[in-house]
Length: 85
Image (cartoon, rainbow, N blue to C red; front, side):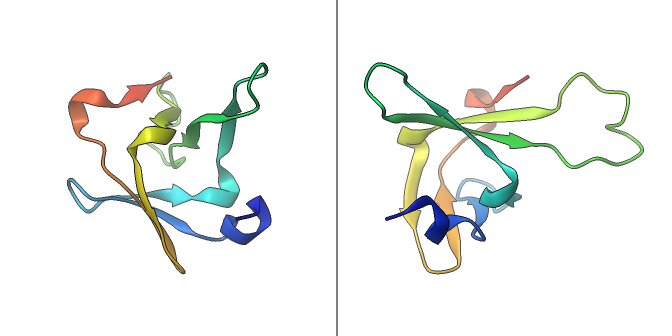
C-alpha cells in the first residue's frame, strides 16, 4: 500500500472508540537504518484548552496498528501505553 492511498483515512482507537485524527495530518517516524515505519505521530487538536499545553503529539507504535481499512485505520492503544510529547 502506498502512502498516498492512506492519506485521508481516519485513525480510530479500538480500546475506547476515540478518533485520534487523520493520517494526512500525522507524521511518520521512520528508522533511518532499516527504512521501516516505527510509529505515527498524531497532533492533538488545537482548541482553547490545549493551546497552552505542552502535550501536542501522540506517538503510536506501528505494532499497535491492527487494521487498515477503506475508510479508517484501527489501532489498539490503551491509555497506559500512550506517549504524548
